[in-house]
Every structure is written in structure tokens, then in C-alpha cells.
Image (cartoon, rainbow, N blue to C red; front, side, top):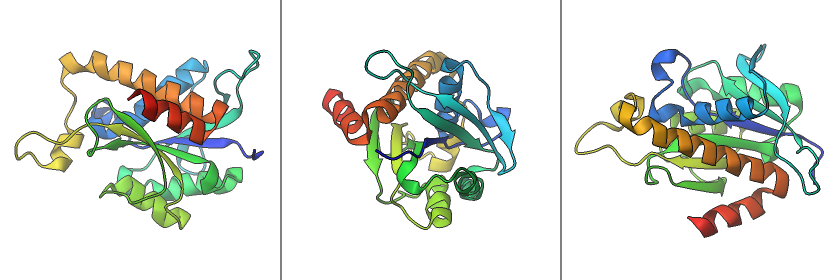
Length: 199
């Protein structure tokens, strides 16, 4: 087991106008994790907002391991620069990076854990891969589904979620936070097996 802390990153766009969009599900999960830890994210010189927390509970009731939760202050397609700068500052390699992002290729409210692979046209993942020099980092893929009819995918992910659907999305964010806690307390492979066996 590495002594490096996990760096947990939620992808999204900054600004209130994007907060309730499908593209910002990663940001929402980071907010849940911060709330559970009883803390707030603080600005870091890497152009991120981050918090150094203990996450989850280990067997025996001890506090979970130290992790860093973070969001980039830049827009999605340039988020790799700030996130890689934060990782370098912390001394955290891509093997201890978990990225939470929206996923068009999964049905709404379905999740999958994945190590490496392609970016599927996701500009945030492309930026991260470019700046880290590898695609071999961990991802929590949060399903948002495909746009209806002939709606453009960019318009779909940036459109505000319908108000009537938001309570269901709030539940989804909490479930995703549970999965993140499993990753850091029982390990990625075990958490992946548990998640995929129940969905």
C-alpha cells in the first residue's frame, strides 16, 4: 500500500451558471465529500480549490485515510494544467489519482470504476491525459445518458438539470461519494468489484 494520499478530483466548470448541469456531476460529488468531512475547499496556488481530509472509516472504527479532494478553477477543457500542478505540489502520481466525471455512454445514475483507457471525446479527460502524460489514472464514470433526439451533446451536458429531477441527482451524488470512500478504504480493485456486482 502506497504512503501517498489519494488525490480525488471532480471535473466540471467553475461558476454558478454551470453548477446544476450534467457536466458538473464531478464537482457535486466533491462538495458532498467536503460536507461529510465538515470542511470547505480553499483556494490553492495551483488554480484549484482543495481540502486535505480524512475520508471514510476503516475496520475497527478508525478514521479513514488522508485524501486530498479538489476541483480546478479553470474550465473543463483546460483543467489538466491546474490538476497536474496540484498533484506535483503534493507529490501525488497518476497511480493515486481518482477522477470523477460525467459519462455519456452510461445510462443516467449508473456508475463504473475504470483504470486507464480512452477519453471518449471528454475534453476534461483529454486535458488531464495530456498534462499527466498518461491515460493510466483511475476514473469514476458517472452516467448521464445520451441527449434526446438530435440535441447536440455539448448543449445537453451544459443545460441545467430539470428542477423536478434534481432530488434524484442529489441521491446519485451521495452514492458516488460512498463509492469514493470505498476506493480509499478498501482499495480500487475491491471497490470496483463491489460496485460492478451490485449494478
